[in-house]
Length: 587
Image (cartoon, rainbow, N blue to C red):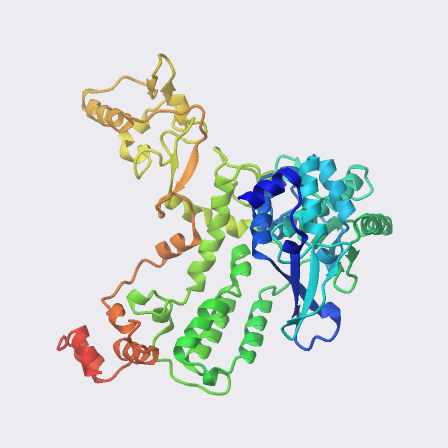
């Protein structure tokens, strides 16, 4: 604690604490040029704790000082936000017959080249105090480096620019520096020098999308005119001059806006390339299961998070996993001991716990609907809302009636129905929850619990706030009906008031959506996946078969005998002659 107190007061610490070993990690096989290596910094433990403290404080304010176009290392924003916005923008351009180009820019050795004076100036313009800027300047400027060559360190040397990959504060500082490029592009758009892309909504209004940034990757939307290309090149030259960063022309592209066919084929190609590196004939069944779960099943995650993969593609990806698991392939066919539908189920159901791509795809798409309902000021939500509109309450967007095009939201919106089948609402001020039609009081809507009362309600679409009377210190429930109650309806009225008893509005709180399948009320892909995969349970001695004491190959043998086209033990159990445990003894 004395170290932290001294740094807080003096803004300095011993230079030796910031000594750093550099490890050069090759980016690809057969690396020969120095640019083919990624320098990773191994910083000292005490400094890393200090840098982590500064990073935790810095990330709390980053979202307030950077533009909505930045999606990397900003709290509340995710890597896929930019992909969704870009697809919706291109979809609007194609449907509006607007000619344009998409400039994909990559920065060369971005962390290593950024200028410190430029970074300090940006922080000053953003309103960071001198003390904060002094802390950051000291942390990044006194670092000394020693390159590990064959595991042995060389001599130490100082740097004059750049940020260290491996330093906890580096990502946030880089985001602050990239805000200068975002500012230049925004100023050019406001001045009419760059057009960007306007996503026009149903009401005629729209949202302007001119560029998107994720760390050192940048997308810029503009018209396919020589003037705008010249303006953009001048902007990039100015940014290079003041920041020290350079555009990597080899990796940068200018793409004409158009539809892309078979985008999902890249996943299958990456799977096959990865399999080519594995010598599966030397990998045990347990090792294959581990590789499928950790690698093959994870490769399509980003794709499935944005679009519904076609059935034929899903079957091809599953076939790759099947062939790898059972040892077959294109040249050698071997029998599969267990049906694939069983293999994809949970271990307690007799499966191997491999993910079902169909269920996982639906759960990942449904996450967007949850974020739409739970988030308020996200830029991606603003884009979707302005393009498609919102339903009453703002929990979900309006249904997409246009053709598919290259937009992604139409399929995502369809899965929103699945979300609200397993969600309810916690009432705050009652302005966004419908009294009769939403699930907020019990497990089903009040209109289904009391259909006779709902039939003669004054407003069947009334909000919860409309049925609350603020008269007096406490207030009370006063749902309005179009006529007086009959004698046989009084019991239903009493039941309604009994359900409402103890519930009240909280004026200072907003209404929020609650996911019923989790204990804390927050949505998770895992919980929805388990909900979709909840059926088909069979009695299966999984704790015995997959016990840590049982070798994996024995477990596979037992699994095949229990669930496969097995010989005598399986048929004996089917006939009821032996129990599960007796069957294991027979094996």
